Image (tube, rainbow, N blue to C red; front, side):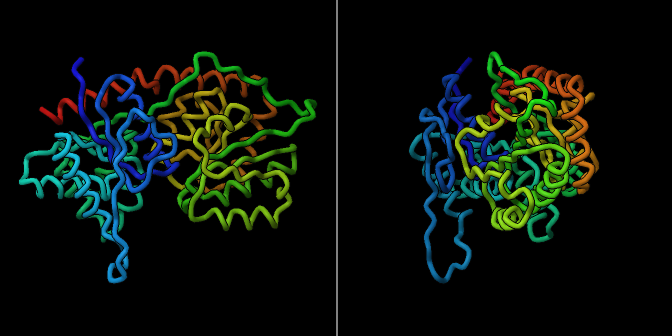
Amino acid sequence: MDSLAVALLCYPTIGGSGRVATELAAQLAGRGHNVHLISYERPVGLDPAVDFHRVRVIDYPLLRYPPYDQALATAIVELYKRSGVTLFHAHYALPHALAVILADEMLGGERLRLVTTLHGTDITLVGGDPAYRQPLRFGLERSHLVTAVSHSLAADTREILGVDSEIRVIPNFVRCEVETARRPAWRPESGRAVELVHISTFRPVKRVLDLLVSVSVLARHVPVRLTLVGDGPELPECRRFVADSPIADRVEFAGLVEDPSRYLRSADLYLFSSRTESFGLGVLEAMSVGVPVVGPDVGGVREVVGCPPAGRLVPRSQPTALAEAAYELLTAPEHFEAASRLGLERARNEFSPERVLPQYLSAYREALA
């Protein structure tokens, strides 16, 4: 198969869109493609085989909000002129898709090809704001191909933006270890604490405070340890909540880490409490190491966990129900082990790089054509 030259644009964060773009870049480079990644900061864990291009943004007092879109467009133009790259893959629609469109106009038009992947809050939160709905819709209409990470997100996009053109569903993916050693289901007589993990960007939509309330309820019935991986705007508030709670000595804030899966491999359960979740990359990562998941039945989560689910799903914004579901799963070893097995099988069979990457390569070739 012929090698492609492609540049990915993303936010360099631990959030799903950034992690997916970084891993996609590595997978493509590992298969012999010429891969570039453009962002304002080098993503954590970016493969050395991927050429990184840092966007230079000026700090000028008159510009209260630095014009990142224009600087990003300039970086795209420079890459085209220097390396001849014409195919660009925008992860998270704003500002990446619009920056490619602007760069193409700066080059005279009809030079660049654009694939835009929607990850979730770029539609469900940003897209619902009147200040951004029109430019977002414009960016999708000018893309040569649009993908979404779930059928739920594709439906949300059509409803929120009124887009009637094709939105191709290509799910996120995860690398699975050849052999995953699962610890046995937790039992009260084991004498150890239940290991809980949550990976987050600590944005309001993740509702991590709800999760902390759930863990506080669960801790009344079983010994627990909770590890929170990631960073974000609500992290200080979460720290304050924990400091004043009965679980203060049972919570670890791990911060940003290059490999969140190392915490998952020793976990009993993965908990999440999002108000909406168009896919749930942390959910899939937990499944890939056989860790059952417990969280709200929102957005595209059920598309990931399957039916029967690889864990337990509850109504959103109900911390007590979340705690009860976790307790029920922990104290039913046969259900716990079934959920563990289902998640691992589903991650390997439905969301492996070998299954998902050909779909992106097909999208790239269609956009180039």
